[in-house]
Length: 194
Image (cartoon, rainbow, N blue to C red; front, side, top):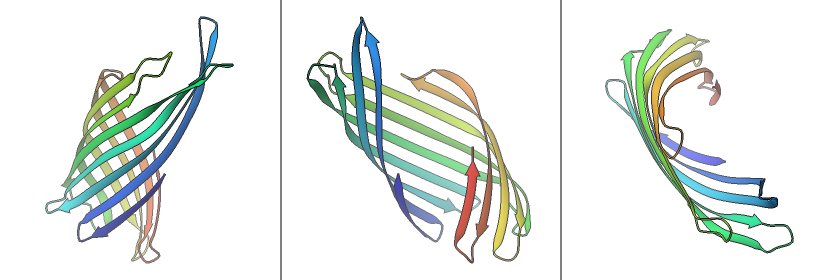
């Protein structure tokens, strides 16, 4: 995964590229099949910060690759693989985080759509899958200043989600937390999120 971004006056644009590989074996009616796939993707994205503590972001992804099936002692069968993705999100500060440190609360929501499709490969039909996710929740932040240009923040978020499409369907709960240390003078940011 490799990305680059550029920020100026409340907005940011970026481009993320990824390369993925996967492989596995499956046994069907006593016949072993080795399966491999690779996928290269590009995801341009944009984010903007508006007045009133509102932040918008969006991304669109496109990817291509190959899927290969190998029955030992036989030919390798290949087919193309393609992937599409759209993502949009909004966050709104409900309480402003004080510059000198303190507690802040935000509302956030986002939507994700993704689809992957492969050509029909001999001995294995065409594969197509689509998934959608909608989330909404709240994020609480506690920020402490560590000097004029450094700060340390803890974040906790929780929200509900709804998944649909060809993936698991239904409602669920998302819970996350993170630690962030920023030193603006050094141009350094360290973060741990889960």
